Length: 246
Image (cartoon, rainbow, N blue to C red; front, top):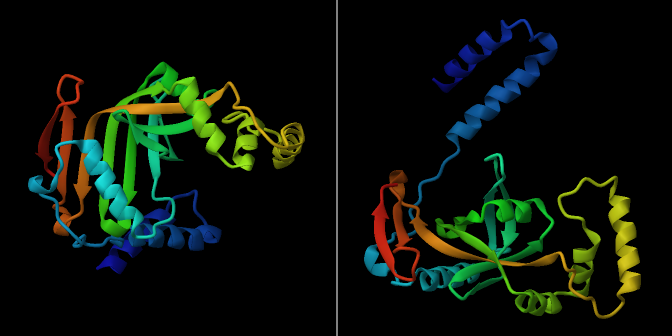
């Protein structure tokens, strides 16, 4: 049946005037890839999540799940997707590394002149997403991003490797550059300028995202996943926990 559907799509496509014989193989590959993607699925059966399993504090629950994930030996277990929105309402997303869970929030560091930082300046409402496939789990966080203090950012910057410290000076993050050689030349210049101690750039620092909603998701069979959301009561530290339909 799948092959019949594929050939039906192919026959319709090939009658379009923009397609000719030279595009035949490309069309086959495109339709074949679509079929493969549509058939790509697994059933989640590793675990389950019940209300009785959850800590009343969502940050403690996050740290509990995070500890379990680190024990799997996953690469970059602290990787997450940060989503922001620009002044025109266009969302964008990128993968970052979580660098702290402290003072009621989730911390990361970046260049304050980057696109993400400019978007946070315009709209501090952000979303974080962690996906841990080996455990069939994900965590979704919504909240407000605020800058860390200068002392907090400096303390972390000092702990970074020398190469990473230099890199913070080298890259004019998110701006167009002429070539890779441009970066390598600047790296040589700043390595020569700061062979030992590297000061923190004034345009570099951290953010703390104070959550207003945190969802814990456990994959289940037949796409009937277990989902629980912690929703902040009036923006405070008390939380309502609700089960969500998958």
